[in-house]
Amino acid sequence: MFNLLILSSAQPASPPLTVKSLIECNNGLTETKLNTTIEDTHLQFLAEYFDTIDSFLEQFDLSEGKKTDIKELCYRRGTQTAMVDALKQWRSPNPFNATYRRLLEICMAVGKGYIATKMAKYIAEKV
Image 1 (cartoon, rainbow, N blue to C red):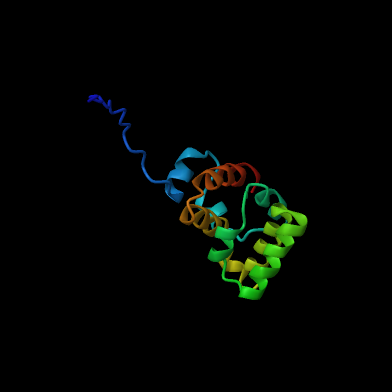
Image 2: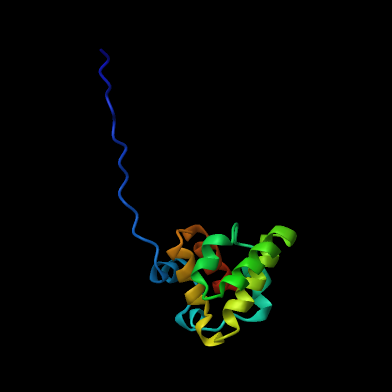
């Protein structure tokens, strides 16, 4: 019989990613910027951060038909093009709900904190 010695390399748990922690880590990221409606001029740049669309589409309040159209667009033209379209459609019924804050919250809700972190930096610097 072999005796295994397992050494624990337990790291202290990092605090959960929140909008507040993103603000604290990004000089220039403010409540005012986060509460701003996403503008057309930033859609293309924000779409570059997405590596997939499926989990995000479930968070956007879109009809099943629109989701199917966006998935088909992703297949034909790529994730970035499809994400621009998805963001526009998400924003169109009520642009006041489509804020940078809500987009960051969606990223965190689907477990894509690394995307939220990159977007927060972009928002701090460019919005």
